[in-house]
Length: 252
Ligand SMILES: Nc1ncnc2c1ncn2[C@@H]1O[C@H](COP(=O)(O)OP(=O)(O)OP(=O)(O)O)[C@@H](O)[C@H]1O
Ligand SMILES: [Mg+2]
Image (cartoon, rainbow, N blue to C red; front, side, top):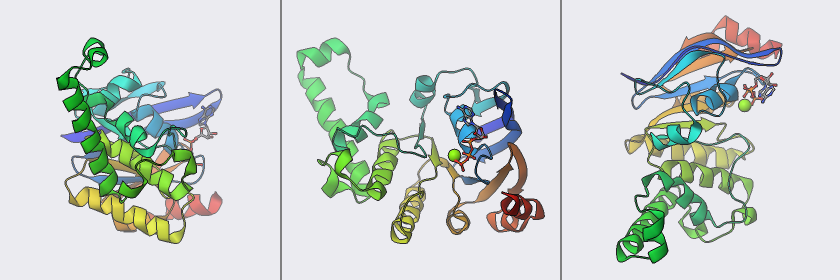
């Protein structure tokens, strides 16, 4: 069974058909890249999968379950995590506090127990912090844990957002341009971080990425979109050479 199946997805904004009859699958443990020129519909597909945009037609199946009409917070609770093209972090909270937000779906105690500060709650809190720390350490962010997000350079913020997504221990991870705005060195670090996530039995991933070097290095498969439609899919090297893809890139 595939971890994600998108079927005949259609999304329009006013008169613009942002996504037109898009279908693809991401298998368990697979890393698929979603590529395409600016405005192709990549982020809109991610928004539909994570429940932030409601499709006009088509279906989104997560581990076989139809989530097309499920609200975003419930989809997250089922094990889907994501990062955003423009980063969505709490700037005036520390790095570790931001990552603790990612642990939210695993908290079991209720409001009353929290208010009473019961020992079990304290233990659970410690456990949560340990796990958040582990997520930070795994991305080399341990030393930044107590810093305010607002103080961090863009490259580190991109990594904090990835740590928060990972901390939720997702089954499916959506990454919207994790290397956008990074220097060559930061880009290489990000690719290594993503490789490490895979090597340690991480979640299935759908990666939106413009850097074709990174796509070829990381992805098992690539899905190319142009003007809301899938124009090619298959091994990254083959997709890259597909005439329709070359034309779309030149035309864009
Ligand atoms: N909320 C919205 N309201 C109106 N139009 C939108 C909205 N979101 C996206 N669009 C339009 O839908 C189309 C697809 O946008 P989308 O952001 O999905 O593209 P993208 O492939 O992620 O591009 P980029 O590489 O620039 O991030 C574009 O024409 C865009 O202007
Ligand atoms: Mg986008």
